[in-house]
Length: 379
Image (cartoon, rainbow, N blue to C red):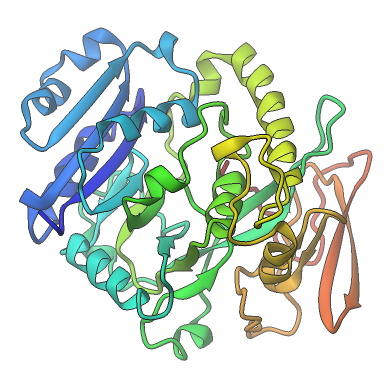
């Protein structure tokens, strides 16, 4: 139907997948319009267990199954998801560890419809609020303060590389900002791979890059989507909840350390190549569909986002995730510094905007600078 939702989920040896799928359908207002494309990377014996094998015969779940040894990382898995799309109007991208607010499907469709009055190509995305370990129902979390995505700092140098890759950090939307928003989604420049809601034409216009292992995945998709004419917004109500830190869970890089090292280096280099295509009508087409889009340029993105890839500056507004420049309530902002202590901050103003230059140092003990120590979470 015209309101069908295709939900893409890539799962790697995740014990919370069954709960996620169960709640996805249980909390939908119209479960029959929800279709799942599942790329299941799991051991054969676990795939055959009752709690997972039942999804093989679910009429609204399409599955591709792989042994963990076959997996090639996040970009590879999510590029496979697109092959399971069967023409549904909307695309929703998730991880495999989520809880949901009641009627999440209706909220997403209504919200995107309202955003269409503000933008011809809206895309809803965010680092959504965490749910506690052992929680099984998102309804109890709906009234908590929503989270948004912030540009924390540049990725730590490694293997002779200084990556043009932002470490994004989730942070609550401050209460005084919430009071001014009336529930309306807000513009952002940052793309979360664990929550996306958009018209499914995005799958064709910004195809998933199978060569992006993990680091650089979100940066490249945000850049490619925005330069392809998509306007990104973060929701200011809780629709979906995400589990950020799962005790005892296996990650792909735990099982594939050599692939992790090689593909992370390749992904970071690829991100630099993507940025170098420039975007816009005169951009370089050397990377084809995986380069920047033709609608806007990297310079326009830098002005909009407050992230400068040329000079490797991050503006204060980007570090707060407030692209429109709303200021935090406290005059002294909380400064996120990697626990390795490998950044030194210099603040200055340029064109009337406060910028923060993150200088890589040789590394020191994980000291606090101006407040809390935070670590990035996403690719």
